[in-house]
Length: 104
Length: 409
Ligand code: SF4
Image (tube, rainbow over all chains, first blue to last red; front, side, top):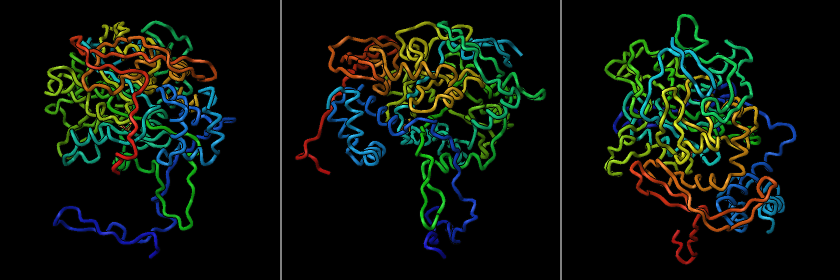
C-alpha cells in the first residue's frame, strides 16, 4: 500500500453497516483523474495584469481608499490578490493603484 | 407549432404553443464579477427543498466553474454541439443591435432547439447519464489525482469564473414544450414554471428538452422535479415580509451580494413593459449590462448575467450573445446612476419594485479604464410593491474597523 491511500472506514448511518472507501492503493491508470477543458489565455494578454486592474477598480468603485486596496493585496487571506503580489512584487501592485487613484 | 416573438433573438420563432400573457414574469440579475463560489446559495436551496430520499443528485441551484466545469457534466458543450450539427456555423447574430425592446441584440441568424428538433421530437436535446449528474463540482477547483511527486495544475493560470445556475423560468420553456402529458405549466401570475406532480409520469422528455438541464428526475416518486422559484416567498406568504413579495432562498443567502431578483411586467409578445425605475428593467434594458445565458437556445430565459470582465470575448459572445462587449464596457465604467443601482444588490429580502437615486457630493477622483471618473456618494433607495421605502444605501460603503484591543479572536 502506498502512503497516499490509507483504508478509511465510513459509517453510513449510526449503527448501520460500514464500508471501506479506499482499501486499495491508487494506481497510475486509475480513471479517478483530472478532467479539465483547456481554454488558453489569448495572445498578448497578461492575466495577472487584467485581474489586478479589475480588483483595484472594483474596490475603488466601492469607495475604498488606496490604503485599503493596498491592504487587500498584502493580506494572505485574500488568496488570489495576495498571490499576484507575491509573484509580481509590491511595485506591480503600486502601479495599478497609481493608475486608478492617480497617487499612492 | 405556433409562431411567437423571442426578443433575445430579435425575431419570430417556432414554438409548440401560442405565447401566453403573464401578469408579471419572475426574473433575476446575477453579477458574475462578484461571485466568490462559496456555494451558500446552493446549500440554502438544498436544505430547503431537496434534502429527501431520491433527491440526492438534485441541485436546483448550482454554481459551476467555467470553462471546464458543469452540472450535469458538460451540459452546455453537449447542447451547443447538437445545435452546431443541425446548423453548422449558424449560431450568429446579424449585428443590428437596436434600442427597441423587441430586438436589443439584433437578429439571430441560426436555428433554436425548437427549430432544429428531429422530426420525431418537439425539442432538440439529450438526457444526461447518471454519471453526469453525480458530483456537481467534480474535478473543479481542486486536484483529483494522487501523484507521488506532486504536480501543478495549469487551469487557474489563465482565467476562470463561477457560473451561478437556477431554472431560468423561461418564457418559452423547453421542458413545457416537450412534456407529452402537459404536466408542466407556466403560472399566469408570475411566469414561474412548475411541474404538476399529479400529472407527471416520469417520461423524462423534459429532462431531455431543457437545454439548461434544470428539470431533474426523482426515482423514488418516478416524477420530475425542478426549481419552484420559492413561490411561497415570491407570492408574499412568508410571515417575515408581512405579505410583501420576497426574494428566493438562493438569492437572499448570497454572501457575495451578486444577486437581485424580482418580477417584471410583460407585454403580450413576451417583451418587457417599459419601466426604467424598476431595477431589473433598468439593468437589462436601459443599461444593457445584464444578458441572457445562451440566448441562441431560444427559450428566452429570465435570469440575466453581468458577464465577467476578464474573460476572453469570443467565449463570452458564445455564452451571452452579441451584447457582451457593450455590457462589459458599461459595467467597467459605470454611469453615475448604474453605480448607485448596483449598491441595491442584496440589501433587502423584500423584492424591490422601484428605485430612486438621491444625488450626493463628489467624494473621489479616479482613473477607470484610462479615463477620469468622478465618484459621487449618491443614495439608492428601494421601494416595495406598495411603494413603501424598504432600503436606502450609499455608494460609499461605510467601513467599520474593529480596533485591535477589542479583537477577541
Ligand atoms: S452565495 Fe453568492 S457568492 Fe456564494 S456562490 Fe452563490 S452566487 Fe456566488
